Image (cartoon, rainbow over all chains, first blue to last red; front, side, top):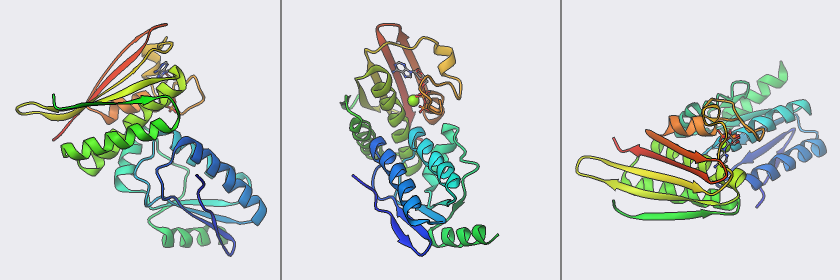
Length: 118
Length: 133
Ligand SMILES: Nc1ncnc2c1ncn2[C@@H]1O[C@H](COP(=O)(O)OP(=O)(O)OP(=O)(O)O)[C@@H](O)[C@H]1O
Ligand SMILES: [Mg+2]
């Protein structure tokens, strides 16, 4: 299973719609980095509205994606994290402190534009 | 004791299967979305540990329905190598695999009861309970 990555101007947009297994998560990480490289995208929005569980493994993959993309020159914003997922992450002791987040896709794009203009 | 069902953990995909079944059962018992997410996440951590460190095992679910107590009891059992440093693994950040080491201490915080029995060379059994409030 592969997660589709859409390109819009200089941005890449991803909406995760499935229950992520480890293999799919790792594949997504690789696909996204390749796509950033190939497209020269400067910003990425990963929308998690449909994700109803983030465990320690997926949290690690998402955190790594943000760091790796940053190294490649693309800013990542995570959007749409459900309240239940946010509470679960705190119980797990995962704070995703350095990860930019926004309420929804639209706010995510605004945040990206602001960060990239600074 | 209402019903008991188990998911065998052999392949990576079984981690997803276990947490989906667990979430369904939690929903049927009457848990709200936040507790459903907590329960599914705890199952995911326990099942992944079995897959990663023991190779195979199983996760079993049991609905608890006493007179004044409703809840879900989950047991994760494997016959893997066991855990050497039990006190260490319950500390945040301890991992032998480069993970976040959030798994077991996280499961303890996500659930209401947590019991672990592990014997080197014999395996590990972790029992957790979430009560319906
Ligand atoms: N079922 C098991 N059998 C043998 N060893 C285990 C088992 N479960 C956990 N362990 C050991 O306990 C350590 C801590 O487990 P824990 O789930 O807390 O963290 P992790 O799996 O290393 O990282 P994370 O879960 O954050 O990705 C593991 O690194 C492993 O050495
Ligand atoms: Mg673990």
